[in-house]
Image 1 (tube, chains in turn red, cyan):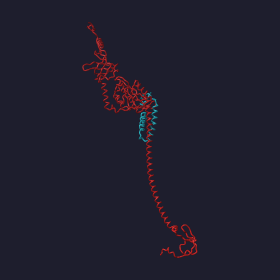
Image 2: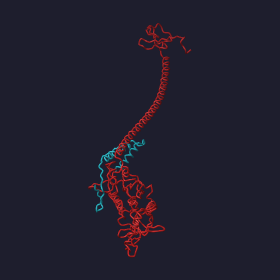
Image 3: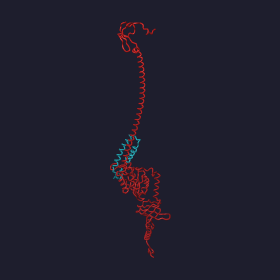
Image 4: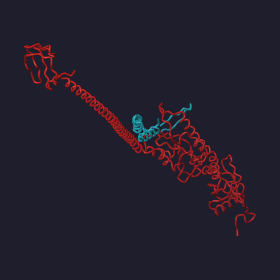
Length: 424
Length: 67
């Protein structure tokens, strides 16, 4: 049996040995996932990451070459429970076994989750997650601000959805980096720019553009690490302080970020956010037409009510007037009756007096005397001949009777007429 | 007045006009105002001139929209 280094004469170089060991190890272990805790993490100026993966019984030196670090979104720190994907090998320079890692996922209750929960707890403590502080979205915004990456499909989706629903709405994009180390600061700068715009206005070719009435902030789907900036506490606080209502749209339906929790509305995707932000134009037109109809109907009804009210009042007035007239008429009738009654009495009284007077007059009428058979003698000259010395024999005179006159002549005059004397 | 405020005011006016206890004179005044608001809203709707712009901050802190 003969193999490399079997005899002293065939001694291998160290390099040949470690290289051989490397080949054997790599051949025996294809790339695989290993679960463990990060320990002794260190980022070197060269850009490589070194740490030890360990559990209670064992440990293995691990490395992430600089070329792989950009693909790892997980915040690697000591104590982080991870699943690391890589190649077990031998590092010839040190002769040590080494795990060359190309991907890392936080495992279970990883630090990522821990941070998420801690951030959430702090925001909750400050009342920023209180449902009561969620603002209603404007129903008819004329300008929508969008904070997202200017290159992303998410922005194109938002613009196309808004354009389709209501081409009259202005979309103002405030570009920001939405992933990577610089993303939180970039998002903060964009939010700050928005706030100053709302306060101070902005112009387009010298013409003021209407300030935004709602903000859509977010990005399209990506790994949990890609979405990390939207879990940043400072970003969350800036969203909560945004002067206009906010809609967050981070990643896909299943991704919930801290930004989603503080925004006034969480949309599953940027397209959905755009739908929430802007109503369909035809629906707004319908609403305006409906309002016009309601107003006209309302006024018509109000006029109808007024007319009925007026009729009612006019009726009441007429009834009252009639009542007054009738009451007066009754009074007039009463007075008239009394006057008539009194008048009749007066007339009757007068008539009575007239009759009495008439009777008296009649009683005194000389004609009455004639009626009783008496006659009056009158001289030819008309003088009444009441005494015997007015007569002389041979003198004519007239006798006035009840029904005529008799011319007579005095035959003789005598003093005696005893049957007429009352003075006996 | 933003479009939003115009429509809110219109809704308010429509609701007020539905009340029978509103004095007729006030109803007429409201209706007149409503007509004005309706014209404003219609004009805003007719203005289908929305633009996509990017907000740029000038060196002096003034914002310009570029579209």
